[in-house]
Length: 91
Image (tube, rainbow, N blue to C red; front, top):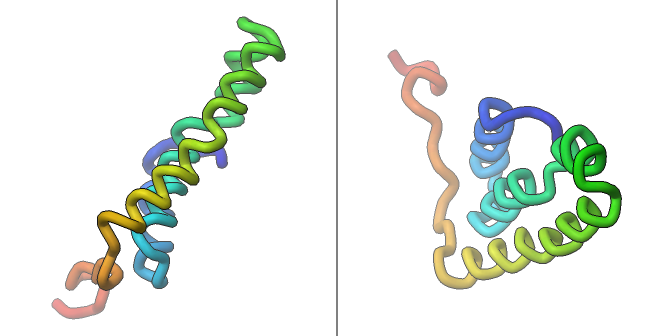
């Protein structure tokens, strides 16, 4: 998914507020950071070649899944984070 952390983190917070558990949110964030197709196309393939870029993506594929399962197992999110008072309309 293209975009920096200023795009990904609010999107992850919105997904968490809509009811996703902590494992899904962590897997999303780690997947964005480790797989990074923009980085693959812009930096890695031109400089290191298709084989090296492909190996990095293949090595990174299991990381979001494993991290999401571990977080879901050991740190379950009991309730979604609530919105700040300014977003709820209280003032």
